[in-house]
Length: 411
Ligand code: C6P
Image (cartoon, rainbow, N blue to C red; front, side, top):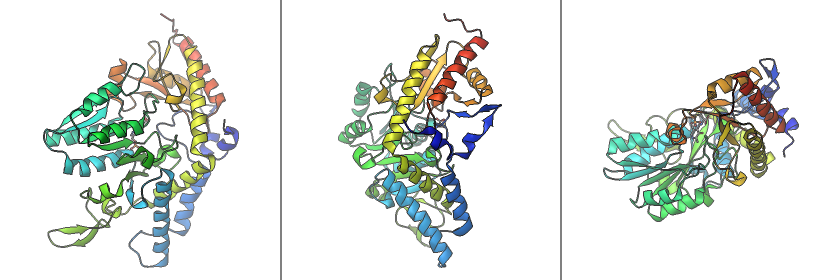
């Protein structure tokens, strides 16, 4: 296990008390807290380096551009991208997937084609494909999940029989914690000629990600879920695929030459970064990656798996609690979704908040998944490197209290 007491000292917000109790932050799948090193990197950037990038000829602007491009190289190295040019900075996973749907998708999907997603996809990896398919007259095929919350490989195989143009799936489910066999799914999709889009929002912060080993074509990530600033993120793509794509947004920086009625475009990745970018976000994200690298993605993954396993064990001992997703420790990340009898998940979250415990309750932007689980909502605790077994104890203890408060009687 990681030395959480030492790590917590790096996160100013975690020293705060909530409702008179020490803060127990268990909503890391929604967003993570930021270490001092990230806060310092952002402040330092504004104190010493701020200027618009890729525009100024003066020294300050050159240093800002260097900081921005160094951040790109850092993101590329962290996920073993094909090249830094294959990293397009975006506002996060949502924008990255919309970029792929709006550019690659619009150019390649025609009427009668199919696009494949899964029943555990976040709305960010579903709605952009719905919009594309509706616009093009293409079919959106949703692959079913198994009883224990994995992608149903038999149904995945059936969906591939139509030789879809695009196959999209999450590496890690935000609502179930399932770690999907991303390399295997990618191989199967490539075998029928599909282009593969991996939603990496929940994998990048928690696993050792190697996009070249996955061999996917597109990989989307969010900086704020991995200790970085909100509004930072990236689309990581195979450079040749990116190169061949039409632009997504038009504006400054993405052009090469502009005439009255047409333009030529900049080289990648700049072709996809119209307008002044979020330099502060990129610099903060690079600082977050440096922090994560110092600890090591494998150690983080192990730590979270252990916490999730401990939480599942504790929660399963409470009569009336149902935990969703795979039971095997190796197949899940640090996300534990559960219901407690007929107590509404929002009530559970509100009661836990009284004890300073932050969890998420709701559909987690996965409404099709909730329908398959036959629930309107779940409560969700999600762990990160600064959580410890004391947080699991606090969660379990507060749940027992919530049960008593609601007069929950097991059926
Ligand atoms: N999930 C959660 O509480 P953005 O908002 O663009 O940074 O990330 C969107 C997104 C895409 N895919 C997955 C698998 C995700 O988990 C998320 C964000 C948060 O689960 C907020 S809904």
